[in-house]
Length: 207
Ligand code: PRP
Image 1 (cartoon, rainbow, N blue to C red):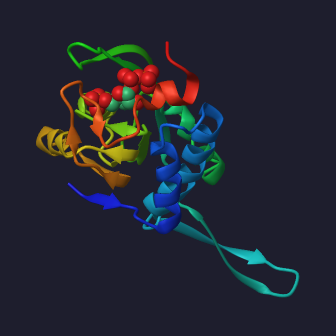
Image 2: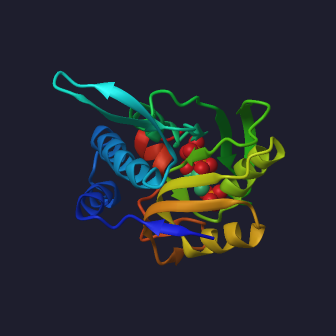
């Protein structure tokens, strides 16, 4: 499984803001927005392009656009903190939604929402979720996608734990991961260490 760690200094700076326990909700949201731009930028680096002729005010030249824009799938809630910025970069992308809440005892994802196109064959998919912890949520979400025919899935995460990456790899699902950091480990409560706490709570407040 391909794992691309975007360790650009500007990405590290945004991630540092997100990690800092003193960062308020609004600043946390802004840092995740900016980090998402960097992650999506790198995730599309090798995307197929279609060419066209474009008339500048001076001459004709070659123009470019994404040949096959990905379906964007934020995993609610926290993935919503990445959705608009990803959409701004890829304005002609369609968006689907998966709602999952991780049970704090069992750490298993509890699904509560699913809104996805029926046929995802031959369509790249970008799954947006700030956190890859045990990997249970992403395995669940990507399994939904592959049941609809998806075979080219990119998980875009601010942070990943080695345990979650291992689980994703062992699932055999067709996925690559783009993240700003692979952290040290999970603690006994299933939180990434050093991590940033609970991304959903830090974006939107505790529920
Ligand atoms: C968090 C996070 C991921 C998931 C990661 O969401 O945003 O979706 O947990 O954990 P996992 O890899 O162990 O499955 P949470 O369930 O807390 O919901 P929220 O986004 O609504 O806060």
